[in-house]
Length: 640
Image (cartoon, rainbow, N blue to C red; front, side, top):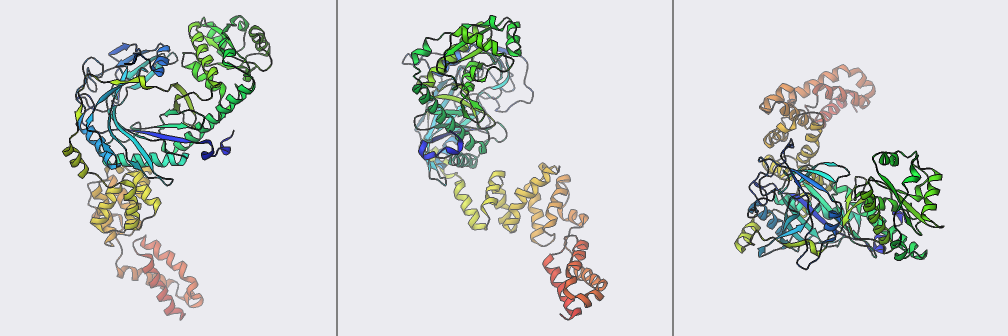
């Protein structure tokens, strides 16, 4: 199936969102450390840890935690008293939750039209991928309910939570089986807004994510910049399974991620049906065991295999009965079913795999392929995979590949996947289950009283989507200009300027979203420009002291010399509007030069005269007024 063949309603597309944003508080969520990233990551001390899963209260293990445990990874944590303490190292109990962060979460809940809980209970969410020294992430439910509007209908809000951000990955070694983490990011307050799976199209997913992001930003108290916003997308189709796709950084990438994931699941369902039609059973795959074929590749030309053998590694092959042609089946652009198997193998510490649908290739000869087939006893229609590396890792990787091949008979396994820059995704781990959550025993519940909620409700800003409509109507602005002001985060400044200065709204908006960014692109230090600089320049324009064309030049000069007086600087730059007398003199001088030609050709000379006059005045005069004067004098001379 191709992307263009997808019909969202027909395939039953369902999408939910989890929008995360770091909060700009004075302390971390569960300690007094400053919630800022350091410019230079410390090299010492290093705290070495192995993390293990624990049973839930029902005696069950979370499947995602078990999968991580099988990878047998080692983690090193880089700590510094400037940004972390014993809480981050799990050597001291957590402190009470940050009150500032709670207030932000309450306000976001209210702005979205939701309800705030009476008591906030902290929970532990098991995470043993090394991103938290404790082996779990602390999270708390603050609100639930509400909705955001989209052009395709409202999207309901499921929950508003607060959680601690993860440690920052610095470096991975040996196929990521050893990882260094910096503890500066660990514990920074993170708000998470989750939706119900109400979204039915890829574009609606983007729109809903944008609306939620605008609401969080409108409340205030949030960080901005690279890495402060993370968007997870949950995607499923009818007959498929919910996939949690993590780390969609770019808002504009969301539609592509949704499309490719829907396409991937649709093709996995086709593979399931094809395998069943071929009569492949789970028993067929369970009975297959990896076979050592190292001797087949003793003199191989494959660089990958030769490198592993030189390190003392082995090569194993696994028969996949009935999988011929399936391994090379494209699921979405650039991703085949063989890629799915390779993702599972890589999680066990090998570099990847080769499969029979792509061989002979990569230095593996036809003779070697035939030798492997004979060793495995393949029949027509069978496929196989090859993995090279350390023997223990190869055996573990083969186990994972076999498990994934068995899953293909059932359709689409529920997974947590990582978004790639091209919109495709790759396997990370199984989706977690209910066994991963259990109560935090070190922090008592936080009671949220009615007075606190009422006080915060009085501080709520205007809903962003309602504000957009008002701006367009009240100030006569186009939708695109309004959207640009929200994207640049200058809406408050815009309204302040227009109300105080009385300048034309379109000029004020264009200055904020077009002129200043253009100056920055041209290398001007626009960080030196304060709101008062912009106000004063636009005031000069509104009073007729400078022309519209002089706004950019004056702002650029002020950026370079912010302590200058704008009015004096305009004089020095020669952009102060010319007086009526000066305009008349320049026009009269040009008329005298062309008087004979005017008598002969009349209005046909007007363009030439206007060009000279405006060049002399250099934008210091209103073109309409100059045109009136020139036209009037031509008529007097030519008699037209």
